[in-house]
Length: 154
Image 1: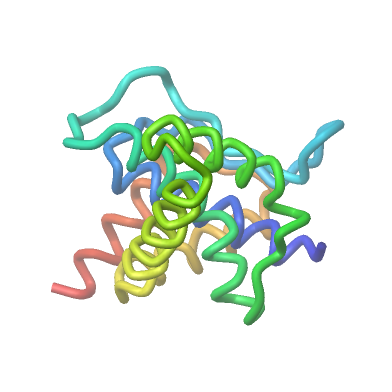
Image 2: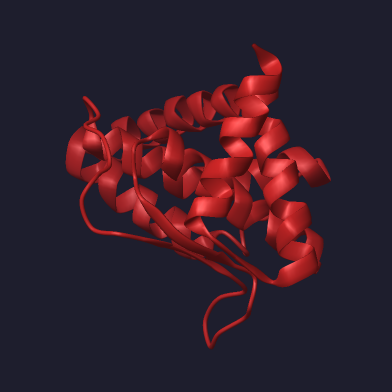
């Protein structure tokens, strides 16, 4: 996977995490043993969301969705760790594999919808650009990019 697509993947996770009220500490595209990048979040939430399980699924799917929006196709191998976690969450809610699959598709649609919002996508692009320049950015910088993009769209 290219470093650019990794940057989009992690930027997608970061923007969705912020939208879902999570406190992002750091976004990185510095590879480790089992991943090409990471978003580090604080435990707990900056603000409450109605559906915590859905929020976690949206955050997990946002990496693959952002990368897919940039490249034109999903990287199922690159997102396999995220997808395994999404499947566990979906099964815990749906109770059976068929319903879990439906829930995953519905949540992926919602993820794509949220990322297609002009301000949100601008923030993903800005964060990805900064990641390519610096390899890692603070959560505060990620929030700043989203707030700037949202202000421009008003």
